[in-house]
Image (cartoon, rainbow, N blue to C red):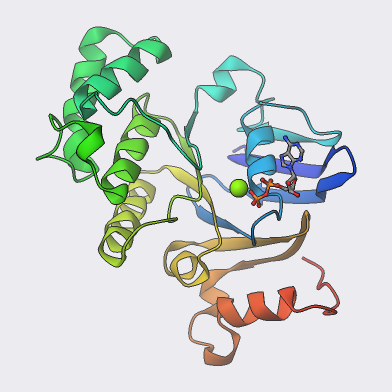
Length: 245
Ligand SMILES: Nc1ncnc2c1ncn2[C@@H]1O[C@H](COP(=O)(O)OP(=O)(O)O)[C@@H](O)[C@H]1O
Ligand SMILES: [Mg+2]
């Protein structure tokens, strides 16, 4: 079976800024991978290449074996951007109807998916409430519902934990684990290490555009001295030689 995501020696530069340098990474179908790094590490740039927004300068990316400029490959991705600006004066049902129309779904399948997704993301009581009155955590859930509308196999979430309170984090975690149990592959970026450690099967750590660590969370768990935060701290400390991935 093709990997959900394959990133092969990818490099991307913006003028003088080397945003992504020779990154190679495979995300297996059905796993949750956390894509970690501090601000400016190159996470969003990598995600934009996975979505086919722009091409790498060198190397290549594949989504289930296909080029992401290919519409069939893209249609297997559900994406939640780092900052989603939704129309505040729509309610969630209207928002999903709008996005479903953009995806080319029929009115009947939009209705069916909407009624399935709203409770699935924990917004059963809020489907008719204006997004203007949603909390940050509720907007994240609305964003996940939007990303899931066309029933994609792969979810790519850019910083889904940012701004969530502790309860919303727990709910987000449960939702992501439930989606994995349904067979979805989840790739999400974060700088929230302890959260990532709790839900990810594996994490990849990016530092200044380079992949500096890739490992399974099972390897880390139970080792009090070597939790993810400790690994991260060591990797990011100034002057620390970069460990090979
Ligand atoms: N469109 C762009 N033009 C110029 N520089 C960019 C652009 N997008 C990102 N960068 C730069 O690339 C680096 C990586 O950014 P980004 O991928 O957004 O990091 P992250 O998502 O990990 O915070 C940063 O130095 C950023 O300023
Ligand atoms: Mg980013």
